[in-house]
Image (cartoon, rainbow, N blue to C red; front, side, top):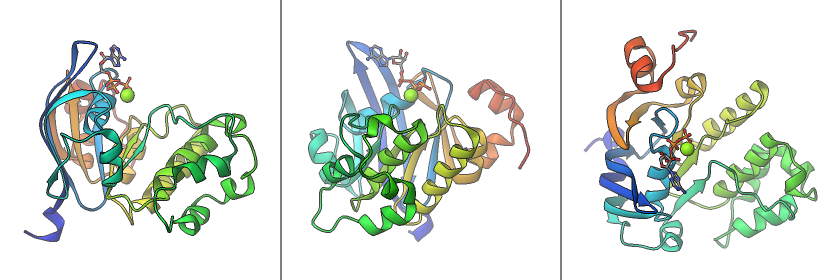
Length: 239
Ligand SMILES: Nc1ncnc2c1ncn2[C@@H]1O[C@H](COP(=O)(O)OP(=O)(O)OP(=O)(O)O)[C@@H](O)[C@H]1O
Ligand SMILES: [Mg+2]
């Protein structure tokens, strides 16, 4: 198997329920060991639920294999220990704690990658004693990404990191993800298609809790029919 086709995460026939309602119907895909893989789809199709099912945060069935080992029977705690980093959709910073405290709480290993994170997010260093709840949305997003990057994860699951951010901050977050992806593969849920086009190689599209299309991000975004049908947008082709 060539390095390019090696996968770090394999998801097969994943199904998940929330409160008895099936939110992930039958999801299968694989994530290459390098670069950024996009998860696309309209609102409410099950993108976040797919990430939460991989992490064992919601009740799930099916096979999830990380670096050749099954993790679908493990608790979330063990899955995180195995090296699955999560940057949730709502950021989930501890509002009453400082930036430094938020980051310290995330450290799992003896030698956290503090220098790498400080270089990537100089603004957070400057604001290390500020309460995280008083940060801007973009700055909170930086804290959320920084937490995941402190540890040597095998993969990051990143859910809509640019949602609700001003264009300039969107670019900053995208820059940080591009840099991070040089050290760790990323599975990225993202609705900003310019960001997807810039960052992602492979992409899957989810609809109704199922994977309905697999290909490259560019191939999907360059197909007006696909983007209209599956993403509900008229993608501006402005490379
Ligand atoms: N806690 C919950 N209780 C009940 N239903 C839920 C819950 N969380 C999600 N759902 C439902 O599960 C389905 C999938 O939701 P999910 O959050 O995975 O979608 P999504 O693709 O991430 O959407 P978005 O793009 O809006 O973030 C939706 O119909 C949603 O209403
Ligand atoms: Mg979501």
